[in-house]
Length: 399
Image 1 (cartoon, rainbow, N blue to C red):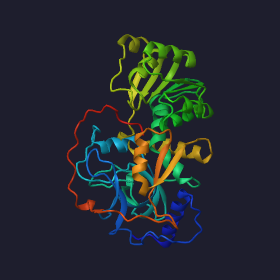
Image 2 (image 1 turned 120 degrees about the vertical axis):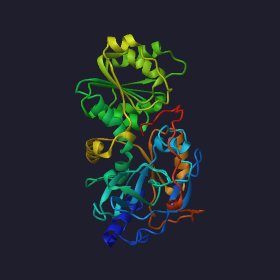
Image 3 (image 1 turned 90 degrees about the horizontal axis):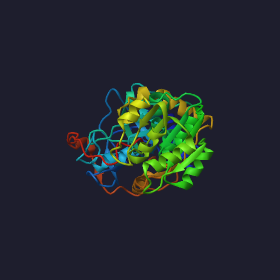
Image 4 (image 1 turned 45 degrees about the horizontal axis):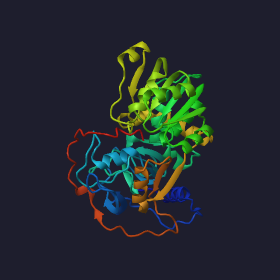
């Protein structure tokens, strides 16, 4: 199925808008009407632990049940870097592959979605299944959702993985109720900042953010936090617990993106029957949970991993997030970079920025591009090695 001219026009208009280039209606860098069989620009990770390089690939032919998408905005997530490192417990790719786990884009060819439709998609990148850090991506139909009208595409992409990791643990796992006190551990990251806003917008009586960067913590007060607590080097769990209690009182819900000692301190200030949901563990792979505390307070501890949650189960969360964006009730700080700048974006994400890094893979009208250094035909690359369980010091990231 070939997309008509208006689909191509919409793809270029979306790319131009995302890049802030002021699209004027002139088609200058047309996405080909024959959208497959050509080399496309892509980021490529050659081996576990390697940084990505800019290259080009040839996508395999589209088959029934898949949709060809022109990628407009593709956020970087900690998970993308963890998989590329070779240390992720659920996937390890020995052969070259295109990374990228989510994107917003325009349908070019599909049996289910009309060409020109704007969609959000998720992708399990592998040598056999190129990811979203490319000009185009093949995505399974069931891993796509149509975007509502009136959305700014870059923020819509930016709140995908990160917003899901904030919304679903709070509203789904923890069942946050109006008037309850919420503690967000790791509140200055993209997920944490969104979690503060989700809790505030859902009527939490008090929201307290906890993280290391004091300057960024202070900004949370403008996003809905009632108080903030800074993590201090070499502080004991008892001392941190005392400061948490002073700032929050007894806590009903803990969203934990840190683990380790901060979680141990948070458990001590939990109210009876509090709910604690872990979404990451940069603070350590283990935490001590005293049995008496667990039973005495009748705590509920659980974990959330977006990677293992089907997109259909995320629809309600994304609908709320996109609606809040459209109503200007949700703020997300975004840094956009072109695909040429994949290494800069990768290293920025590696440094744990307090914003979302989003790649813009489409050609921008009037822009120039360097020629890729090489072409990788992923369709001919052998399958990846079987998944192996690896020691995971950093944990499965939330976003």
